[in-house]
Image (cartoon, rainbow, N blue to C red; front, side, top):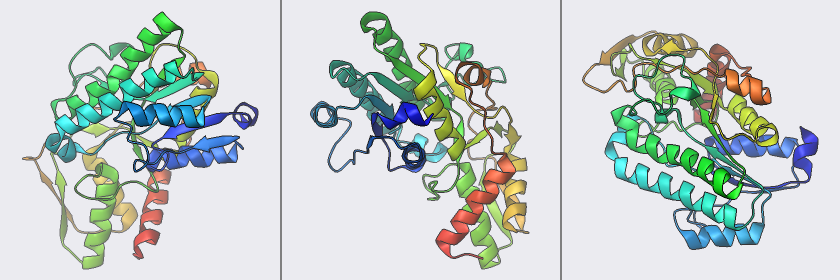
Length: 315
Protein backbone atom coordinates (compact mmCIF):
# COMPACT_ATOMS: atom_id res chain seq x y z
CA UNK A 1 0.00 0.00 0.00
CA UNK A 2 2.95 2.34 0.48
CA UNK A 3 3.23 3.25 -3.20
CA UNK A 4 -0.38 4.37 -3.53
CA UNK A 5 -0.16 7.00 -0.79
CA UNK A 6 3.38 8.25 -1.30
CA UNK A 7 2.50 10.63 -4.14
CA UNK A 8 -0.87 11.76 -2.75
CA UNK A 9 -2.05 14.95 -1.08
CA UNK A 10 -4.80 13.85 1.30
CA UNK A 11 -7.28 15.99 3.21
CA UNK A 12 -8.53 14.33 6.40
CA UNK A 13 -11.49 16.11 7.97
CA UNK A 14 -11.71 15.20 11.63
CA UNK A 15 -8.03 14.29 11.44
CA UNK A 16 -7.39 15.51 14.98
CA UNK A 17 -10.19 13.37 16.40
CA UNK A 18 -10.33 9.83 17.73
CA UNK A 19 -10.52 7.91 14.44
CA UNK A 20 -8.88 10.68 12.41
CA UNK A 21 -5.71 10.70 14.51
CA UNK A 22 -5.22 6.99 13.88
CA UNK A 23 -5.86 7.41 10.15
CA UNK A 24 -3.27 10.21 10.04
CA UNK A 25 -0.78 8.07 11.96
CA UNK A 26 -1.20 5.23 9.48
CA UNK A 27 -0.89 7.60 6.52
CA UNK A 28 2.36 8.91 7.97
CA UNK A 29 3.61 5.34 8.31
CA UNK A 30 2.82 4.84 4.63
CA UNK A 31 4.86 7.98 3.83
CA UNK A 32 1.97 9.92 2.36
CA UNK A 33 3.37 12.94 0.52
CA UNK A 34 1.08 15.49 2.17
CA UNK A 35 -1.58 15.18 4.88
CA UNK A 36 -3.86 18.14 5.54
CA UNK A 37 -5.82 18.23 8.81
CA UNK A 38 -8.14 21.27 8.91
CA UNK A 39 -8.92 22.70 12.35
CA UNK A 40 -12.37 24.03 13.15
CA UNK A 41 -11.05 27.37 14.38
CA UNK A 42 -9.72 28.04 10.86
CA UNK A 43 -12.25 26.18 8.72
CA UNK A 44 -15.89 25.88 9.74
CA UNK A 45 -16.98 22.86 7.69
CA UNK A 46 -20.66 23.73 8.10
CA UNK A 47 -20.14 26.79 5.85
CA UNK A 48 -19.50 26.85 2.12
CA UNK A 49 -16.87 29.62 1.96
CA UNK A 50 -14.36 28.01 4.36
CA UNK A 51 -14.76 24.65 2.60
CA UNK A 52 -14.08 26.18 -0.80
CA UNK A 53 -11.10 28.09 0.59
CA UNK A 54 -9.72 24.93 2.16
CA UNK A 55 -9.97 22.90 -1.04
CA UNK A 56 -8.57 25.66 -3.24
CA UNK A 57 -5.63 26.21 -0.88
CA UNK A 58 -4.72 22.56 -0.37
CA UNK A 59 -5.74 20.99 -3.72
CA UNK A 60 -6.09 17.43 -2.35
CA UNK A 61 -6.08 14.34 -4.54
CA UNK A 62 -8.21 12.52 -1.99
CA UNK A 63 -10.65 13.65 0.72
CA UNK A 64 -11.27 11.40 3.72
CA UNK A 65 -14.34 12.86 5.43
CA UNK A 66 -14.23 11.64 9.03
CA UNK A 67 -15.47 14.80 10.76
CA UNK A 68 -18.77 14.36 12.59
CA UNK A 69 -20.75 15.66 15.52
CA UNK A 70 -21.22 12.50 17.58
CA UNK A 71 -22.11 11.18 21.01
CA UNK A 72 -23.82 8.38 22.89
CA UNK A 73 -27.55 7.84 23.39
CA UNK A 74 -27.85 10.69 25.89
CA UNK A 75 -26.12 13.20 23.63
CA UNK A 76 -28.28 12.14 20.67
CA UNK A 77 -31.42 12.62 22.73
CA UNK A 78 -30.35 16.09 23.88
CA UNK A 79 -29.14 17.41 20.53
CA UNK A 80 -31.02 15.74 17.64
CA UNK A 81 -31.37 19.00 15.74
CA UNK A 82 -27.72 19.94 16.05
CA UNK A 83 -26.56 16.42 15.16
CA UNK A 84 -28.83 16.36 12.10
CA UNK A 85 -27.97 19.79 10.74
CA UNK A 86 -24.22 19.83 11.27
CA UNK A 87 -23.61 16.32 9.98
CA UNK A 88 -25.90 16.80 6.98
CA UNK A 89 -24.55 20.18 5.94
CA UNK A 90 -20.89 19.14 6.30
CA UNK A 91 -21.39 16.13 4.07
CA UNK A 92 -23.50 17.85 1.42
CA UNK A 93 -21.18 20.84 1.03
CA UNK A 94 -17.92 18.90 1.21
CA UNK A 95 -18.98 16.50 -1.54
CA UNK A 96 -20.29 19.31 -3.75
CA UNK A 97 -17.23 21.50 -3.26
CA UNK A 98 -14.93 18.51 -3.83
CA UNK A 99 -16.71 17.81 -7.11
CA UNK A 100 -16.37 21.44 -8.19
CA UNK A 101 -12.67 21.46 -7.26
CA UNK A 102 -12.07 18.23 -9.20
CA UNK A 103 -10.98 16.09 -6.27
CA UNK A 104 -10.12 12.64 -7.66
CA UNK A 105 -11.80 10.63 -4.90
CA UNK A 106 -13.99 11.24 -1.86
CA UNK A 107 -14.28 8.74 1.00
CA UNK A 108 -17.41 9.35 3.10
CA UNK A 109 -17.59 7.76 6.54
CA UNK A 110 -21.15 6.92 7.53
CA UNK A 111 -22.52 5.34 10.69
CA UNK A 112 -24.09 2.10 11.81
CA UNK A 113 -26.89 4.27 13.23
CA UNK A 114 -28.22 4.60 9.66
CA UNK A 115 -29.51 1.02 9.66
CA UNK A 116 -33.19 0.31 10.39
CA UNK A 117 -34.05 -0.37 14.01
CA UNK A 118 -34.95 -4.01 13.39
CA UNK A 119 -32.42 -4.94 10.72
CA UNK A 120 -31.95 -8.73 10.40
CA UNK A 121 -28.65 -9.86 11.96
CA UNK A 122 -26.01 -9.81 10.63
CA UNK A 123 -26.67 -6.44 8.98
CA UNK A 124 -26.27 -6.64 5.22
CA UNK A 125 -25.71 -3.47 3.22
CA UNK A 126 -28.77 -4.47 1.16
CA UNK A 127 -30.97 -3.88 4.23
CA UNK A 128 -29.95 -0.24 4.66
CA UNK A 129 -33.20 1.20 3.30
CA UNK A 130 -35.65 -1.38 4.67
CA UNK A 131 -36.93 0.62 7.65
CA UNK A 132 -36.48 3.64 9.91
CA UNK A 133 -33.45 3.94 12.24
CA UNK A 134 -33.68 3.49 16.00
CA UNK A 135 -35.39 6.62 17.32
CA UNK A 136 -32.75 7.83 19.79
CA UNK A 137 -30.17 8.38 17.03
CA UNK A 138 -32.31 8.54 13.89
CA UNK A 139 -31.55 12.20 13.16
CA UNK A 140 -27.79 11.55 13.21
CA UNK A 141 -28.08 8.30 11.26
CA UNK A 142 -30.24 9.78 8.51
CA UNK A 143 -28.03 12.86 8.15
CA UNK A 144 -24.97 10.67 7.57
CA UNK A 145 -26.87 8.36 5.21
CA UNK A 146 -27.57 11.25 2.89
CA UNK A 147 -23.90 11.14 1.90
CA UNK A 148 -24.60 7.75 0.34
CA UNK A 149 -27.48 9.19 -1.68
CA UNK A 150 -25.33 12.12 -2.78
CA UNK A 151 -22.35 9.90 -3.60
CA UNK A 152 -24.44 7.62 -5.81
CA UNK A 153 -26.24 10.53 -7.49
CA UNK A 154 -22.97 12.34 -8.21
CA UNK A 155 -21.37 9.18 -9.59
CA UNK A 156 -24.35 8.71 -11.89
CA UNK A 157 -24.56 12.31 -13.15
CA UNK A 158 -21.00 13.61 -12.89
CA UNK A 159 -18.83 10.49 -12.77
CA UNK A 160 -17.58 11.66 -9.36
CA UNK A 161 -15.70 8.93 -7.53
CA UNK A 162 -17.18 8.93 -4.02
CA UNK A 163 -17.42 5.84 -1.80
CA UNK A 164 -19.40 5.29 1.39
CA UNK A 165 -18.22 3.20 4.36
CA UNK A 166 -20.20 2.09 7.41
CA UNK A 167 -17.95 1.34 10.39
CA UNK A 168 -19.54 -0.32 13.40
CA UNK A 169 -19.10 1.12 16.93
CA UNK A 170 -15.45 2.09 17.45
CA UNK A 171 -13.29 2.00 20.57
CA UNK A 172 -9.63 2.19 21.50
CA UNK A 173 -6.89 4.46 22.90
CA UNK A 174 -7.74 8.14 22.46
CA UNK A 175 -11.49 7.61 22.73
CA UNK A 176 -13.81 10.12 24.42
CA UNK A 177 -14.11 9.27 28.13
CA UNK A 178 -16.45 12.15 29.07
CA UNK A 179 -19.41 10.44 30.77
CA UNK A 180 -21.84 13.02 29.36
CA UNK A 181 -20.98 12.35 25.71
CA UNK A 182 -19.01 9.10 25.53
CA UNK A 183 -20.05 5.79 24.02
CA UNK A 184 -20.50 2.64 26.08
CA UNK A 185 -16.97 1.18 26.21
CA UNK A 186 -15.08 4.28 27.40
CA UNK A 187 -17.92 5.08 29.82
CA UNK A 188 -17.75 1.61 31.35
CA UNK A 189 -13.96 1.63 31.57
CA UNK A 190 -14.00 4.97 33.36
CA UNK A 191 -16.81 3.95 35.72
CA UNK A 192 -15.09 0.69 36.66
CA UNK A 193 -11.66 2.21 37.20
CA UNK A 194 -12.97 5.16 39.22
CA UNK A 195 -15.21 2.93 41.32
CA UNK A 196 -12.25 0.67 42.03
CA UNK A 197 -10.10 3.67 42.96
CA UNK A 198 -12.79 5.02 45.32
CA UNK A 199 -13.62 1.55 46.70
CA UNK A 200 -17.25 1.99 45.69
CA UNK A 201 -19.62 -0.95 46.02
CA UNK A 202 -21.30 -0.74 42.60
CA UNK A 203 -21.56 1.01 39.27
CA UNK A 204 -24.69 2.03 37.37
CA UNK A 205 -25.20 1.09 33.72
CA UNK A 206 -27.83 2.55 31.39
CA UNK A 207 -30.54 0.22 30.08
CA UNK A 208 -31.29 -3.44 30.66
CA UNK A 209 -28.00 -4.87 29.40
CA UNK A 210 -29.95 -7.21 27.12
CA UNK A 211 -29.14 -5.52 23.82
CA UNK A 212 -26.10 -6.48 21.75
CA UNK A 213 -23.38 -4.48 20.07
CA UNK A 214 -20.39 -5.10 17.83
CA UNK A 215 -17.17 -3.18 18.40
CA UNK A 216 -14.30 -2.43 16.01
CA UNK A 217 -10.87 -1.45 17.32
CA UNK A 218 -9.90 1.99 16.03
CA UNK A 219 -6.62 0.88 14.40
CA UNK A 220 -8.51 -1.80 12.44
CA UNK A 221 -11.10 0.77 11.34
CA UNK A 222 -8.37 3.10 10.08
CA UNK A 223 -6.76 0.24 8.18
CA UNK A 224 -10.10 -0.59 6.55
CA UNK A 225 -10.66 3.01 5.51
CA UNK A 226 -7.24 3.23 3.87
CA UNK A 227 -7.67 -0.11 2.11
CA UNK A 228 -10.96 1.19 0.69
CA UNK A 229 -9.36 4.50 -0.28
CA UNK A 230 -6.79 2.61 -2.31
CA UNK A 231 -8.74 -0.32 -3.72
CA UNK A 232 -12.50 0.34 -3.75
CA UNK A 233 -14.23 2.49 -6.34
CA UNK A 234 -17.78 1.14 -6.24
CA UNK A 235 -21.11 2.84 -5.66
CA UNK A 236 -22.45 0.40 -3.08
CA UNK A 237 -22.05 1.06 0.68
CA UNK A 238 -19.59 -1.16 2.55
CA UNK A 239 -19.67 -2.30 6.19
CA UNK A 240 -16.53 -2.28 8.32
CA UNK A 241 -16.85 -4.62 11.29
CA UNK A 242 -15.70 -7.80 12.99
CA UNK A 243 -18.84 -9.97 12.64
CA UNK A 244 -19.08 -10.63 16.38
CA UNK A 245 -21.71 -9.23 18.73
CA UNK A 246 -21.74 -9.18 22.52
CA UNK A 247 -24.56 -8.49 24.97
CA UNK A 248 -24.03 -5.28 26.92
CA UNK A 249 -24.38 -7.17 30.21
CA UNK A 250 -21.56 -9.49 29.11
CA UNK A 251 -19.49 -6.51 28.00
CA UNK A 252 -19.91 -4.90 31.42
CA UNK A 253 -18.73 -8.04 33.20
CA UNK A 254 -15.78 -8.38 30.81
CA UNK A 255 -14.66 -4.78 31.40
CA UNK A 256 -15.14 -5.18 35.16
CA UNK A 257 -12.90 -8.26 35.05
CA UNK A 258 -10.22 -6.58 32.94
CA UNK A 259 -10.16 -3.46 35.13
CA UNK A 260 -10.17 -5.43 38.37
CA UNK A 261 -13.49 -3.96 39.57
CA UNK A 262 -15.12 -6.44 41.98
CA UNK A 263 -18.23 -4.49 42.96
CA UNK A 264 -21.84 -4.89 41.92
CA UNK A 265 -23.43 -3.82 38.63
CA UNK A 266 -26.81 -2.11 38.70
CA UNK A 267 -28.68 -1.73 35.42
CA UNK A 268 -31.12 1.17 35.06
CA UNK A 269 -33.99 -0.01 32.80
CA UNK A 270 -35.55 3.47 32.88
CA UNK A 271 -32.74 4.58 30.55
CA UNK A 272 -32.95 3.69 26.83
CA UNK A 273 -31.21 0.63 25.40
CA UNK A 274 -31.00 1.91 21.84
CA UNK A 275 -31.12 -0.51 18.91
CA UNK A 276 -31.91 -4.11 19.99
CA UNK A 277 -28.98 -5.76 18.17
CA UNK A 278 -25.98 -4.69 16.13
CA UNK A 279 -23.81 -7.10 14.21
CA UNK A 280 -22.50 -6.54 10.69
CA UNK A 281 -21.97 -8.73 7.67
CA UNK A 282 -18.51 -7.51 6.65
CA UNK A 283 -17.98 -9.95 3.78
CA UNK A 284 -18.26 -7.22 1.13
CA UNK A 285 -15.27 -5.35 2.64
CA UNK A 286 -13.16 -8.51 2.59
CA UNK A 287 -14.26 -9.36 -0.94
CA UNK A 288 -13.89 -5.88 -2.44
CA UNK A 289 -10.70 -4.61 -0.80
CA UNK A 290 -9.32 -7.33 1.46
CA UNK A 291 -10.30 -5.91 4.84
CA UNK A 292 -10.57 -8.20 7.85
CA UNK A 293 -10.35 -6.93 11.42
CA UNK A 294 -7.37 -8.34 13.32
CA UNK A 295 -7.88 -7.20 16.92
CA UNK A 296 -10.06 -9.30 19.24
CA UNK A 297 -12.39 -7.49 21.64
CA UNK A 298 -10.44 -8.71 24.68
CA UNK A 299 -7.11 -7.58 23.22
CA UNK A 300 -8.51 -4.20 22.20
CA UNK A 301 -10.11 -3.63 25.59
CA UNK A 302 -6.84 -4.38 27.38
CA UNK A 303 -5.00 -1.85 25.20
CA UNK A 304 -7.71 0.76 25.78
CA UNK A 305 -7.79 0.21 29.54
CA UNK A 306 -3.99 0.39 29.77
CA UNK A 307 -4.00 3.64 27.78
CA UNK A 308 -6.65 5.25 29.99
CA UNK A 309 -4.93 4.11 33.17
CA UNK A 310 -1.71 5.73 31.99
CA UNK A 311 -3.48 8.95 31.01
CA UNK A 312 -5.18 9.25 34.39
CA UNK A 313 -2.34 7.93 36.55
CA UNK A 314 -4.58 5.14 37.84
CA UNK A 315 -3.39 1.81 39.20
